[in-house]
Length: 202
Image (cartoon, rainbow, N blue to C red; front, side, top):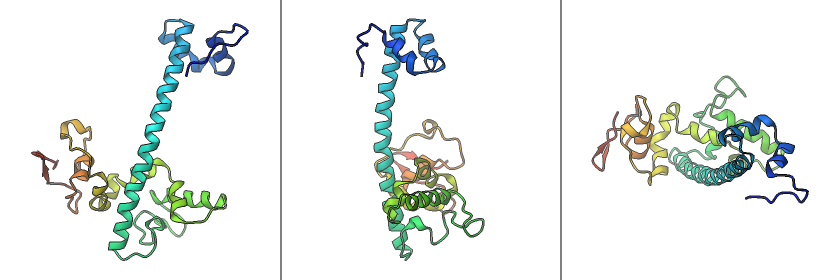
């Protein structure tokens, strides 16, 4: 949103300089060849773009979180585990990996989330814990270290389109995008499925 200048005649740029550091503003001034009015408009434009990005990212995070949570709960039930997956009773996500109370990732993030819930005096239930997990936690769940989860998590990405290996941008023995979407991942983490005429194996 573009704000009107103050009634005392101070320019938008001068108003920004009152509140923001010169180091922060220098990039915008350089990009506009020293034109302060253009630099102010560029700063405002960048702010609007950033706000739009964070809104979209927020939708993505909630959608991803709910989709993976649902798939992990189905996995729990198939394996006969009574409690929610977030407590990692089977010690699959790094709980107590280095000794009692000494966790590895991704469970370290869960342990931190549990402490936050307790510190806030909220009920220690799965929904509260999950709401405290950072976006990076969900990325860890689909990382190559967790290939054992891929067959169960694949359905969370059922609507994702397969992309050619040359375009997916992942240079690794297992293509995470292709393997995850195919839903036919072997124990080694490799996918040999062909969808839409495209072979997803490395």
